[in-house]
Image 1 (cartoon, one colour):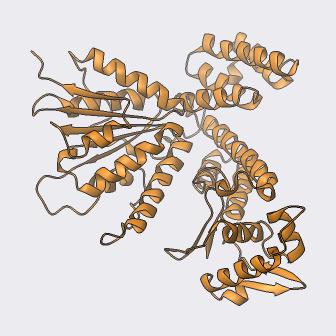
Image 2 (image 1 turned 135 degrees about the horizontal axis):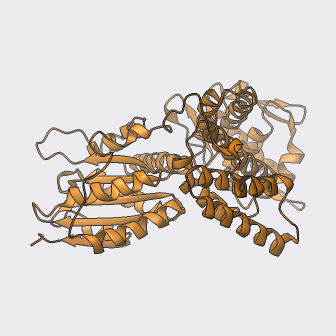
Image 3 (image 1 turned 90 degrees about the vertical axis):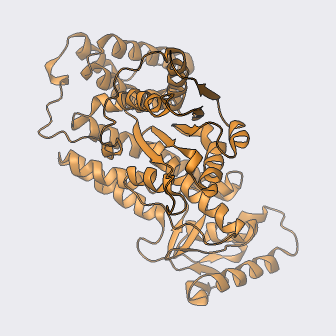
Length: 446
């Protein structure tokens, strides 16, 4: 079994997602997962889910929820056992994503303490890849989940900080500045993030900006809490002012960031693009928003020979320079391509494989597939800003366009810029345009 609470509640038996029922039934499972392998009294469950004054039918409703869950879970009665006036959910080692995350985080911290930053980065990135949104997001307003949500969100941020620390040790500072700027903006009182940003900027030859980060941090701490920055941040400021050689990074081996290979061959640096300054300025503004965690969709359309792909290449080059990962997919006009072909290519650029699309016209299954792909992109963007280019969409299948529409509706809370490129007016343009920041129509240059 694979139980997931680092995002919406899910339970998978192999590749099969289990139907967990309605909100109350899902809440029972979530509560038992939080107390995995422990006996939880029926009285406690009723109190947690119904409050201090539960209805008279609460105990019976709980029994019905447990009965229904036993029908869904493999080896139902053995998995969800009745014990001492309550219930216990049997969860094996590694079956709950929370436990896998905490194990990987502990391993990453231990490796970092031993000085093995490369292995630490691998563990910490693997830990963060388990996240698919806010923890227990189905129960954001349920009292029983609040303490664990707060604890897990703090652990997630700590894991991000640990990952960044290890990546700084590997000399990856030029790639980290956009991510650190976005994180420091969201967590202005987090001194460790401010210090990491200062160090990344200083090592990138941006000393004045590094010192400005310190001044902003001091202003925020004084304004919000009435305190000065801690000793570590003060010492870092003094070291930057003195240009202390100890601040320089000298990694024995500085590999590229994870999935830097997502920039496809030939897209490492686009040639200068002339005559598109206004359009590029618009997309660069969208890129800035995306780097700050406010995702955007731009649609680029034009006739043959108007330079649509070169235009997308130019913004990809700028995004790569800012530390974003580049995912690129293209529709195929020659026939015979599998469903979701542009997405298969793009997800492969992220070092992953597209989940198996649902067969036939099952709308509910397709919706779940769209959710899974969207959460995959969200998870990637949580680790590193993403630029997703989908080219030649006039040749894409209907499912690919529907998936793009679905993703676009979720973009505002992701660090992702999506550029949809098509010849003339692709199918579903009007529907997509509802989610787009702008639709750019390229004409031939004189």
